Image (cartoon, rainbow, N blue to C red; front, side, top):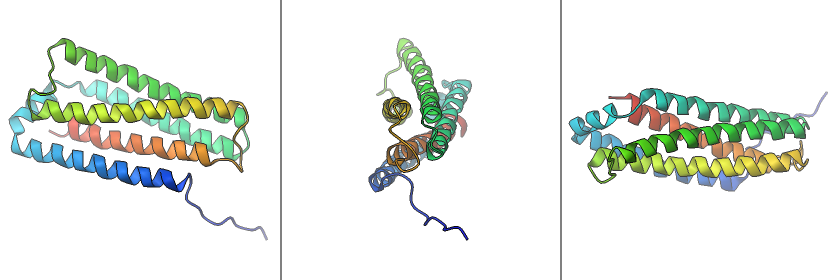
Length: 189
């Protein structure tokens, strides 16, 4: 008869507190966006019409791909495969950097066309939501880079998963926030 491991919350407890605070913060921003859209439907339809659904979808694929790589990294490290875990973390980094490049290109195009965050409530909330999310992706990219480097050095394994699990938890939150943001800002009219 084999001993069963006690179920445990992955990652550090502090990361879960951070996730809760971030979800509440973004929840308030999402609610603000929804209320403003309800009050000014014409402004929001016009603003959303200027967004590229295909660019938003590409960013969604990049983030989901990075989440998949992060999950595979934790699985590899849990199995004692440090090198593989490191490569998966670098794959997650690639997805994060891909998102940052695409979103930067999107922002640059908007700025070049005279986009001003203070034009109306849509542009202000779009800039706030996507800019704040962008910063979270940037943090996630740095985390993946550091974790990937440490994993390739053999720092993580079945008994040392706190940092990679916490990084993956943070990233999955970033991914979840994008799913809501993408639906709310790019898709729902």
